[in-house]
View 1 (cartoon, rainbow, N blue to C red):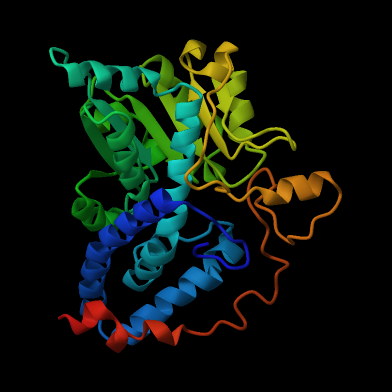
View 2: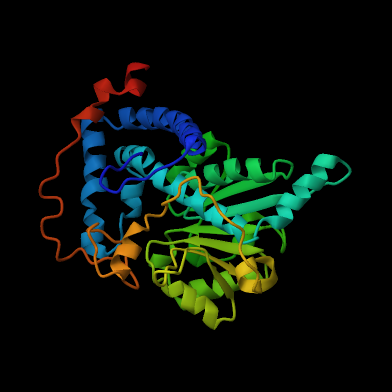
Length: 351
């Protein structure tokens, strides 16, 4: 079991080794982050204020957005984000990729890797852009995943985000970063690519804030005009409005999550060619033994279906976002985590 004792997650030895690799990568990010915190003045205040932003989410109550761009750019906030959010972003991306593989999306790359391993064959580069990629935990998961399933295929991984200060962390992980607003469009122009040169787009927890015709038209154009092979989407809600909007545009949507206990659109793939995935082509998916078996957390679905929900928890079910305005107690009992006192922080002591 790891991370959350209230909603326990489990993994195998393989998953443990992956999480160790994540923590090893985070060490460099946290060291750089401590330098930024020390430059702000009183490090204990900076970290305490950042932890308050992460926990209380004042922007969510006021404007319906989890955190503002200014909050994302706060070094104290970024420290908590790196320590905690990295696990969610990494494991959920890994689980999404596993489900994509079971549904046949990556069969071409596995075959290309096998051909390249025998010699005399040069596979096409897999180029993936993560929209709203932040410090690139999704890209780290993608890198490690493709090193296992298609080790002979070259990868180029790109993070795009509205908050420019994530760049320093993305650079440390060895990926490319572009400051970009999804409403600006022209993604290939931003990346200096031609049609067909961007293989996949990955979108994690962004569409909830931009489920509108402009964004859906842009994503449809990526598939049909820019020849992106697929758009891989992770969202919080089991009912994701973007799915219906894309289907109305004739885009095929593969739902990766088990639908046995009702609609679950938290992990989906948008494609224009329905033959590249088993579920959209009418074929049977491959058997899957997940490394992180209950990611994202799904035990509540069976309990809810049976009319008994002892877990006292569920992910977002609203079409847009959770309404915190009636949660009057949120943040009132916040206490700074003294265990993160800067003088006890190993990255401070190493200075």
